[in-house]
Image (cartoon, rainbow, N blue to C red; front, side, top):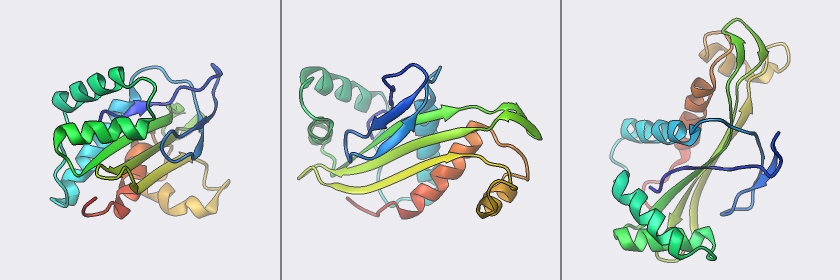
Length: 184
């Protein structure tokens, strides 16, 4: 698993961003801090809870190889960089994640000016041929129960209150990983 990244919109206030691996469009937001590490930690925690479907190699060694390969391959597409990293590690697949938006709520649990909003995408790429084997994405801004009755299960799972961005991301990660494959 390469370190998760954060998409940076061209406009300071935010705007659309295209995923370099699958071409999906997301509304990205300006972000302060390294929220990609929060989403990456949620991914690793959920993968541990799922059980030993796949062995995940993460950490400084992978980050170092990723930095080295991407600095040498500046003009190559991300897909090719990920294949090279996977080959270098002797892995069958490479997991890559991107955080597009991680906006904290403004307010408290029972009254907000602005709700939490999170968007991220995770890909599993097969190293042998560069094929995208799996993609999971989450893009949600919490709404009040009166605004969107279809979100009632999520609202009640959150305790009937306005959740933090990390809580929203954790809920999203749980949903996304329900479809994660057993092998690349």
